[in-house]
Image (cartoon, rainbow over all chains, first blue to last red; front, side):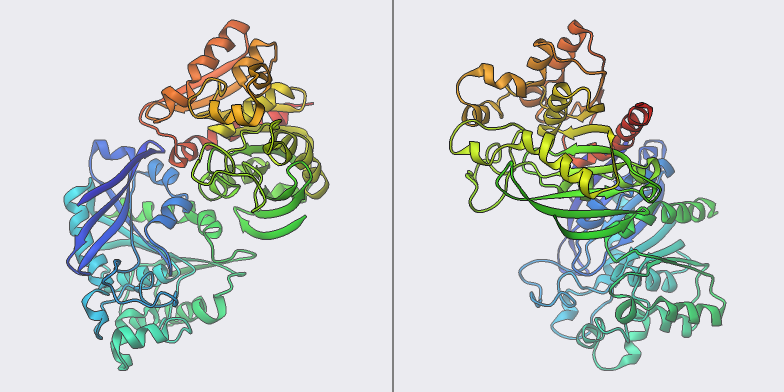
Length: 280
Length: 280
C-alpha cells in the first residue's frame, strides 16, 4: 500500500492511498478518514460507495462527512468505482459503462471479467487491506452510498447481513436490472441470462429471500434520474411485502448532487453510529 | 445578471450567477448561498474571498459553510479572484499573477489597469448587484477569506470599517508588500512606487492608522507557505502595538488546504454571526 497524501482535518486524518488490487488486476486508489478517537483504539468502519463517473475524491471533497465522523469516532472508507488504468477495457464516451461505472459486480463476460470485479474488491480484498493497515474495528461495520453506490451498498448489505450493522443510501438505483441506464451495462458485464443479474439487484435479492435489519434511504424529489433510473418506490413495495424495515424519506426540491448528499450526511452518520456502536 | 444554476442544499439555495462587470470589463461569475430564513426577510451578508488559483467554486464545493449558514441565517457571497476571459492579460504558467491572482487591488499599470480592478469590484460593484437581486440585509455585513482572500478580507475591512461588523481569515497573507509570492505581482499591477502598495497591505494599513473592531485568524502550523508567504506574527505584532484586537490561533498539524478551512468554518461563521446580528 502506498500513501499518496495524509491531511489533518477536523482533528482526524484524511488520507489517500493506492495499492495493487488482485481482484481488479490494476492499481486502485481509495480514501480513508481516521477520526481522532483512533488514538485510543480501533474505531467502527463505515464504507461509502460512490456513483457513476466518480472516484474516491468526489465524496472526500464534497460529502462533508468529516465533522460528524470526527465527533462520532468513525473511520470512513471511500473506494473508487471501477478498475483504472490504460490497460482496462473502457468506453471513454459512455459514462454509464466501463471506467467509473463498475456497478459493484463481478463481471463474467469477456473482456471485462479480468478487471471489473468490484464486488470481490469491496467485499473481500479492500476490507483485508483496511483491517491490516488502519485502526479499524472490523466487528463494527456499516455501508452506505450514492446512486450506483447506493445500489452497491444495498446489495452488499443484503448479501452480507452478518457483517454490516447498518446500511443506508442517498438516491440509490434499487432495481438496476430494469433501469434505463444500467441494463446495457449488465448485459455486457454479466451476459444475457438475467438470472445471473439477480445477486446484483436489491429488489431481486429481497424477492429471493435476502434480508437485512433495516435501511435508511433519502431521495430528492427534484432528482432528474428519479423516474427512469432510481425509482425507490419499487424497493419500498418489496420491503413492505416482505417485512424488511425501510425508512424512505422523499425531499422536496433536492436533486442528485453532492449539495443534496451533504445536506443529509449528518442524519446518515448518526443512523450508522447508533447501529454500529450498539453491535455486541 | 444571469442565473447559471440554483440547487437546494441544507434547506437553502446554493446559486451560481454571472454578470458583465463594469469594474473588470468582462463577464464575472460568483456564487451566493441564500439560507432558508430569507423567506422571512433579508439576512446578514458574509463575503468569502478565495485564494490564489481559485474561482467561486472551490469554497462552494469544499468549504462546508452551508450547514451553519443555514442554521444561523446568513447569506454567503463567494466572488471570483480575478477578471476572466480570453481578452484578459494573463500569464498562464504563473499561478501567482494574472488570472486567479487578482490580489483584490485596483491595478494602475498597463495593460492590467483595464481589467484587474478587483478592489472596486468587491467593494462597490458586486455589493450593489447583491443588494438589488438577493434578500440581503446590507446593514449587516461581514467579510472573510483564505490566503490571498484573507489578505483581501483584512484590507477591505480595514479600509471600510463602518461597513463590516466582522472580519476573519484563514491563513491570510498579512504583508503582501514583502511576501515572496506577491511582490512581483504588486510591482506589475501597481508599479515601482511602494507607497502605492500600502492601501493593499494589512500591516501597512494598521501602521498608517487604519483600525477595525477585531480580527479572528486561524492558521495551520504545517502550512507550507507559513514562513515565506503568510507570517501572521507580523500582523500580530502590529495589532499588539496599536491595540487592534486580534485573536490568532495557531493549529498543530493543519496545512493550507480546504481540509483545514472546513475544520474551522463553524468557528468563523459563529464569530461573524455574533457580530453581524449584534449590529444596531
